[in-house]
Length: 206
Image (tube, rainbow, N blue to C red):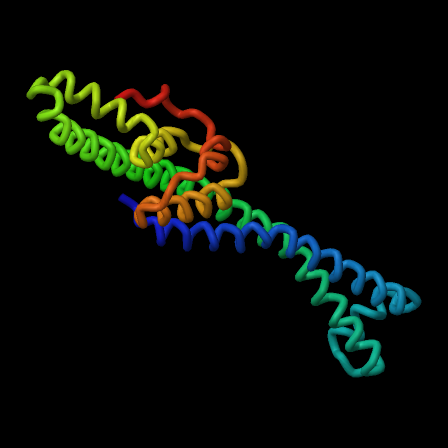
């Protein structure tokens, strides 16, 4: 099983990666604005003269030469941004697929843990009820199921039999981490949270 702490770290990485396309768009806009200002300041210079002067670097005044070089550098950076943005988007898409699979794997593992806890408590309850039920295992099991109907173990099993299938993946992973920690600590299920999950399987039957 994937370790939840590692999945959580990868989710934080995804959240940071998702900022890259917008950051690159902003950078491109700033570069374009600066290039536009520089272009306006140099537009009176004949392009052929400008090219010649740039090549030898001796006849153009230092200020204008610096602006020209800066303009060329900006244009090169602007040309590189679409490729960098596409690369970032590919990384985001690949990580989203990987994390989606990890999320399902971890959720299913906690569902199995919840099932084990419930089954263990049900078996222990049945053993306790045997004497009161005259040694009848069927009656003892029925009594155990009735007692377990609203137990925390059953509520956790019901909760982990539901998996969020919509909403932001990073948010779903963060909520799973918080709830898993509460489950491991023996804490209660918050029914308001469980109601937000989308059904994955039919209701749990004991």
